[in-house]
Image (cartoon, rainbow, N blue to C red; front, side):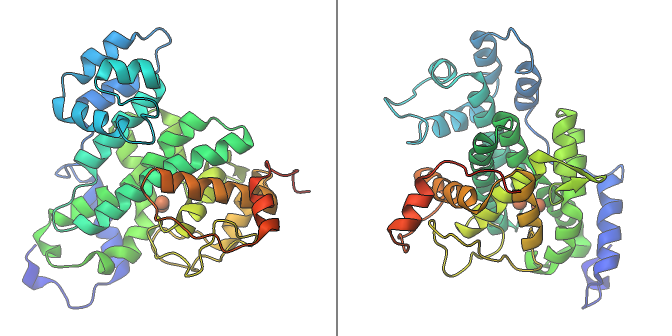
Length: 328
Ligand SMILES: [Fe+2]
Ligand SMILES: [Fe+2]
């Protein structure tokens, strides 16, 4: 299709259908995870995997290895002395953390890259990393599997990149801005995330989680990982790492949860966030304490700007308290 044939107004329903058709058409070339990252995901599921095997595998992709090392060298991971080699990173951080770092590096290097969409892709990349770290905090407070959830956090919105890449390669859509695509991307991105994780042959539970990541319940049953993701997304949005601008009065020690917008890119309705917190048996105090921890972590990771404390001593004390009693 030619650009000149495109009508001035984009019909959301038409674009949605076209996007769905594009994603399943034989000519669609999905963003690819580097072979080494896919192999590492499979290898790390084996019980008796050796450090040397992982290092050897990573050495096959020097660019990915370099990026992984640079994340491992950041202040967050290299607490005692800098990590200077892959072998050291594997020994010091452990294979699970190394796998997470490789996936984060791979997404940043190869997947969150769409020509002409650099700014939204950079935002998406930071959002995904932030949500992955935040969901780990939520999981530790609710005894869910934090490491599996971290991967879901990293991958939940890869569908945005899949959709944008499909559209960017079609000359018909040349010149259309991210903002014009946004309402339709919002509706289609979760199924695109599922499609992409299936193409990448990632474990099935990950495919299922990303497919419905804005729903607390799937087929009437609570999905705890989805609930944790929704709480994590809320806290990341408050900290300025959502896909939408944060609330003006973001406060790490707030006792009341700010209401996210009713609609917009990657938004969760406030009723859904409350439902997620209840499903995880997190009361207001537990959410408050998790918020303070997530804000601090995102600052330490260099993802969020420091937030000045606005609340007084009682709120601070609440933030320091452990997760509260289950809500009845
Ligand atoms: Fe998201
Ligand atoms: Fe999303």
